[in-house]
Every structure is written in C-alpha cells, then in structure tokens.
Image (tube, rainbow, N blue to C red; front, side):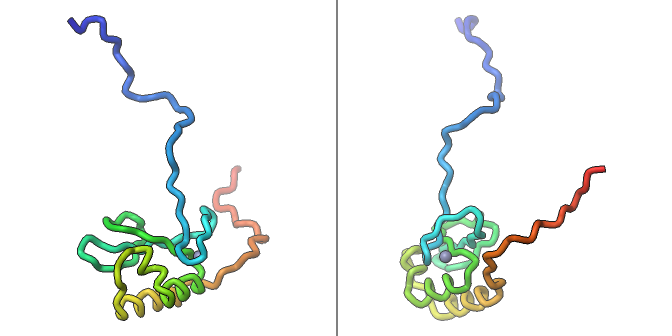
Length: 121
Ligand SMILES: [Zn+2]
C-alpha cells in the first residue's frame, strides 16, 4: 500500500529560509539594532518583573538597549510598564535603576580594531 512512498531525507539541504527574524526594539528610544546590545526585561507568569540576561525566561518581554539614559527614561515615564502591560513597583524600579547604573557608558567610536585572539600561523 505504501510501497510507492519515496523516502525523504530527514535533513534538508542548506538554503535560504523565509524565516521571520524577530526584531528587537528598545522600548525607550525605539531603535532597532542588532549592533547595540539589547537587554531583555521579562514579566514572569507570576507577575514579577525581572531582568533576563539570557533572554530565555518565560513571560512577556521588553527590550532596552545598554544605554543607561534609555533605562532612566523608560522607568521614569512608565514606558517599560506599558510595554510589559503591568505595574512596576518601586522596589523593582530601584533594582532596574541600579542595574542601569552598572552599564558601561555608551561609546560610539569603534575605530579601534578588535584584538585578534587566534592568529593563523
Ligand atoms: Zn534605547
């Protein structure tokens, strides 16, 4: 009955896939960038707002770029709360602010060439 079924290889050949690439956008400056690191903040199913450096936590996520100014603006103007569709309590705001304070200042001059780790013989 099924003798005529051609055996399909499990692995598909490499090729262009029309796959949708999720765009990350900073909720504060609305800049979409793959170059600049975006940090994910997630509202967990329990309703807590947490930093998600791995980007893998369950829940509704929002992104902020690594510019402390974006964090300050997002926290002060409820942009982040709106993006996450939740209220962010003061304790969490303070925690996120504290995290933003640890971010390195943004440098827009990548003129220095990156040091090469593996040099070919
Ligand atoms: Zn931003």
